Image (cartoon, rainbow, N blue to C red; front, side, top):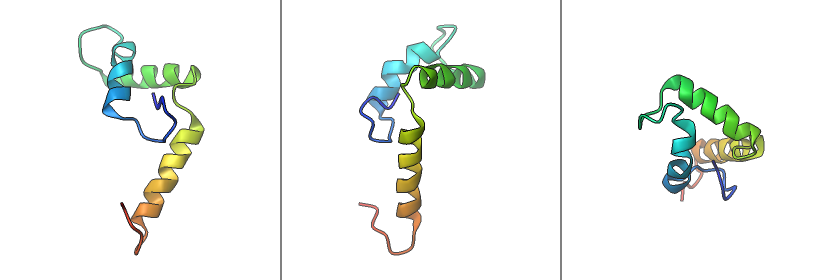
Length: 70
C-alpha cells in the first residue's frame, strides 16, 4: 500500500488499494476484510516490514520531548 516507500499510506495510496481489500465489493471494509487484505498486500510486497519500522521510528522520534514534528 505504501507505494512510494515513505513509511506513510496516503489517501491516494489507500484508495488505490481499497477495492482489493473490499473482498465482497460492497463499498465497505470489515475487520476481517482488512486483516485479510492487509496480509495479501503484504505478501505481494505492497506493505513491507521496513516501511512499517521506518514509520514507527519516525513516530517515536516525534513523540520525544524537545523533538520537532515539522
